[in-house]
Length: 157
Image (cartoon, rainbow, N blue to C red):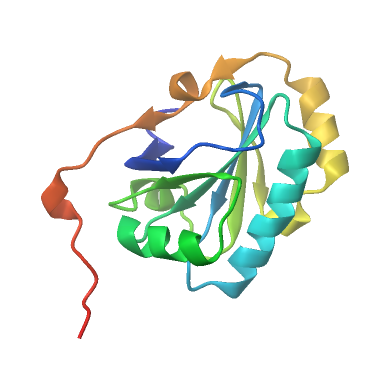
């Protein structure tokens, strides 16, 4: 699984999920410039609040961390936010259209994929019943630090 999902930096953990040990993890691929991504994030926030146990939503952007931090100051979220510096996870999962989502179980298997707004409450309930094994987020996904020189500040005239 570590080959498919890697994070470079954690900006924040979820503020509504009860634990980082869960049976299902939803990876929300998004960007600050993507209007539909913002709507999808709000939708996923509602699902996260309704299911704080055994379900954990991770918003993953391949943008510069400073850009994401500035965006989060204007539009705060309760979801976990991570960065994919080199776009490895985006590339490994062939993410070309945003927003996009993957539902991953504790074994690291992708059990659902598609637009986050197509992922319904009934789908979540179905997958929660089928996936009862629980693992910590750091056992399912790998956070791989990237050297400081990889991240460049945004150009400001």
